[in-house]
Image (cartoon, rainbow over all chains, first blue to last red; front, top):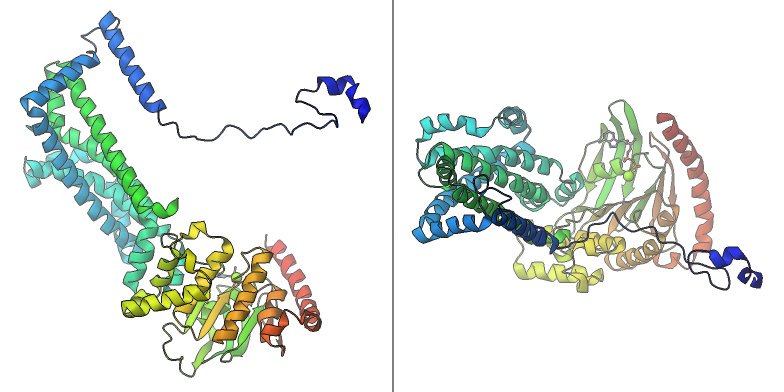
Length: 281
Length: 256
Ligand SMILES: Nc1ncnc2c1ncn2[C@@H]1O[C@H](COP(=O)(O)OP(=O)(O)O)[C@@H](O)[C@H]1O
Ligand SMILES: [Mg+2]
């Protein structure tokens, strides 16, 4: 093999070729993989804000079209100083919490019923399919007549809006539970109740939680819409008022609050997932 | 307690799955059932444990279950059927929770079965952290916890690699030496059938009928060292099965 040394092929081979004419197998397995890079998101976000601020200061972005982030921050500061922030925020958050939790609890119950009982499935699943696609905000006038112009109609909109996606997530979660596990429960003589609470519910939990993620975003959208239609306090009312006065700095401040609420809700659900589904990895 | 299968036949719709199956599982006896895949072994086992009813024929229990038996007919499944959201210990506790035992009695049983299956140090592990062999040991621990009179084992070692299978067979033999449980052990693996069965029921391809019943006198504990004697039996069984397996294989191809 010593002749290899003299042969041009060996000398010009790309990867280092050793005396015996061996070279390492070229690596081809890179890419197509997600590595968590937590710092990239905030950096991009901060960069965009900075560009925006610079654009406003240099006059590239007209203040009539879009106020600078610093102005929006100023509007937010005013809101805090006058105490109105808390007023709007508490109105919105209490509606959100109440509507979302009632809708989710009812949704899980009905979803379980549909998942467990053939009668409930035949009776309710066509109804769910019929009601799910209706934009619930269209029913607000009806809810105002039924539950009054106050909190009732707004909460009812949220309850309705979160109920249907939760029902669907829950019963498809129940349908997805491994039949073999249920059969195992039966073969050990577990009570019906135990099979439901210890096998079916935990098995459906991942689906229920991803349903909760979706229904939470739906709830925020409906909340703002309902508050824009008729509310004295609340982020929706605040944004609407800012918009009609062309107080764009206030409008941006309000929208930023919404985005923060959305982020916090997503973070809370993420935490719940990590805590409740710790068995998954 | 004995389990008696009497003239069991079954159809799923138009498909005849098994015909006229009769045999008895005596107390403290391991009956292995072998047959090509699709011949109705799993279905038969579901009849034995009362998870499903045959179209005709019956399965009887004779004699009382031993004292303290919480679940006389207990399964060990091929796919383990462990709850992934419960730890090793939690999976064992699951089957005890509904029996209103005192907390200390429950703890005692859990400690005992985990020790017997050599799982004590893994009691708080999640199923996903365990190898296949360990998972099946957990399933066996869970089965032992309810003090079964008859264990119904559906290819319990088929999902495992061959070394793990050997180890678990040794474990089962040792366990049988101490507990003298009865079992119906379904498999398509001749070596398992010969190592673990006091009696071997050979089924034909679908519709499953009994081709032959072979008794083996060599004690379970001596089989590992006396394989040469068993070789003859194993070869005889293989001849029975080979034709069935070949035909069954071709049948599946026709169906596709
Ligand atoms: N629930 C069922 N419905 C219809 N056919 C079934 C059902 N379970 C099993 N079968 C059919 O019955 C036959 C026997 O199945 P099975 O008992 O699982 O065989 P084995 O365990 O011996 O491989 C197969 O052809 C299978 O397709
Ligand atoms: Mg099978």
